[in-house]
Image (cartoon, rainbow, N blue to C red; front, side, top):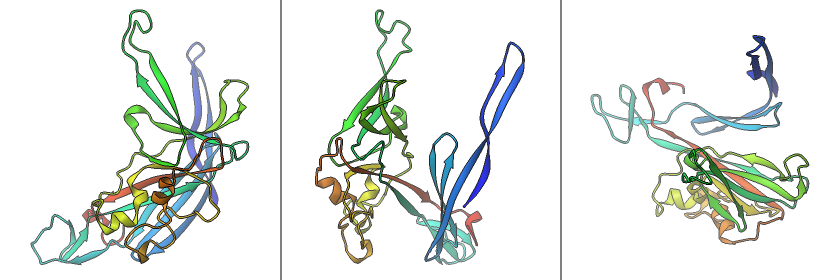
Length: 261
């Protein structure tokens, strides 16, 4: 656990007086590492002074290699050292979030900023856009969409912000990273159904902690994971719910990854 400076928090230059004011930004970091075979993963939970929580995942360690004859190349990976081929692969992570926004009666609302056609009466300059809000009513897997500025808000509909008049909420922006590439019929994909969507909404259950279920390597299909949870079609409107943010790294190795990433 440590604090660190994170540059500028806010700044403004008064163009009338040419005087500037600036405040620094501080972060409180809770960080841990875990070693899985050849990889060492570092996870950092960053809390800032604007009440944001950022989850950062880092991958280091020793890249996995197989032998390759000198002078040969392969479309399955990159030669990182003479005779050593590092395979293309993916890392897919999932963060479980058990919210309580002014209590446990919460809902998730998908919010998008969408264009509105130019109209002489309602949008004469063509620069108006509409903020479209869709409540999520049943357990489901959803996807990020940066082209629509898609984000998700966990709301308490019974508690109204006295300034905005909107329900109190906490915003989540899932990273639009590449999802699991493996074929839907492959063992890898069937073991990790959670990797098929960026964001999941499920109803709270006491023993549901793992996106891929408790024992993903001991079966050929995901059991007790997010795929099963979504298939229950539980009612998640104004109830005790859980949200899951999925993000990942597609790692096509380069020579700079060798010998230590």
